[in-house]
Amino acid sequence: MALQGALRGAAALRRSFSMGNILPAPSGLSNAAAVNQIQDIISDNCVVIFSKTTCGYCKMAKTLFESMNVNYTAIELDMNTNGSQFQDILEQMTGGRTVPRVFVNGTFIGGATDTQRLHDEGKLLPLVHQCQVKRKPLTAT
Image (cartoon, rainbow, N blue to C red; front, side, top):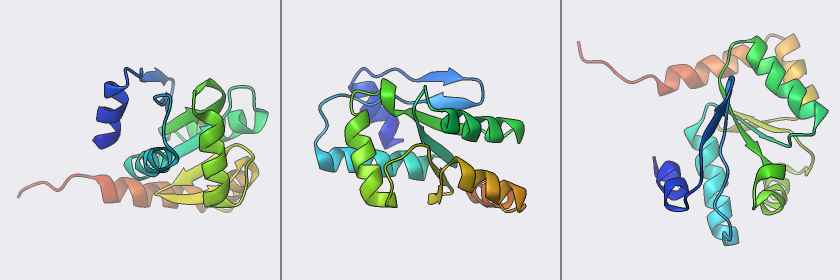
């Protein structure tokens, strides 16, 4: 995975917290490199939550996925050297700067209340399952 190589090369650490992975980014990224890194994170993970550690809505989104027993990757912008830059890019990508910014199966689905609404309507888990099915390796018969 290209993202892991970039992170390893920048001596970044990958830490796992309960259901979510937190991936800090190397510092000093060009804007193009930051855009590429965000796109790689989104495409390489089924569920990505761009978050801040002090945000109640971010906690709400993470708790929702944890309650569904769904793994997610959390990018904690307030713990990331490039967090502000990432937040600027996410604003350009999604039309909003607030967190959380939740992506499922490569698609932006909204913030915490949007994610909760999809769950309440029974639409969130099918989105996650589509991603998980798409990512399963083919086995030889």
